[in-house]
Length: 100
Image 1 (cartoon, one colour):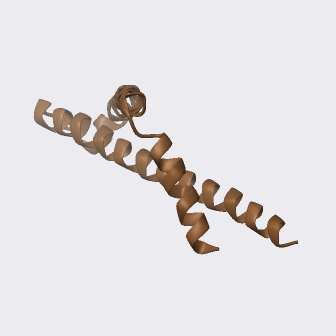
Image 2 (cartoon, rainbow, N blue to C red):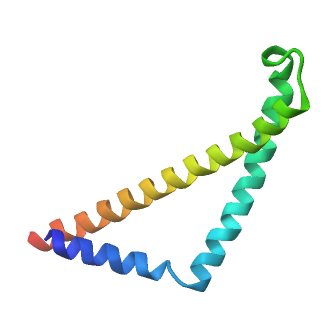
Image 3 (cartoon, rainbow, N blue to C red):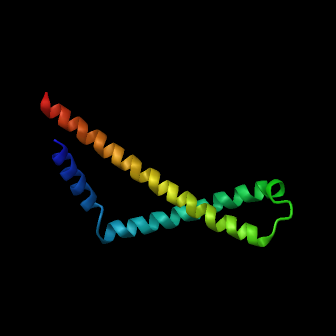
């Protein structure tokens, strides 16, 4: 039972590999990074007066570089967790239906 689930998961993962998969991943990463930079810039501008009264350009550059990268990491991590959960959930349902 577990071996069949792992085999299905490996088959599903193999379908996402290849040139088109990598291209889609790169495009999605660039779009997410651009959105994250926009969000972080808006949040920084809104709260810069409170957090950094003597705001220096180095602080702004550090925040606008590190924060979007951390957000991108968290987004991909959550995406991977959601994908694994959905695949396991749906494959688990198929297997329980086969037993009935």
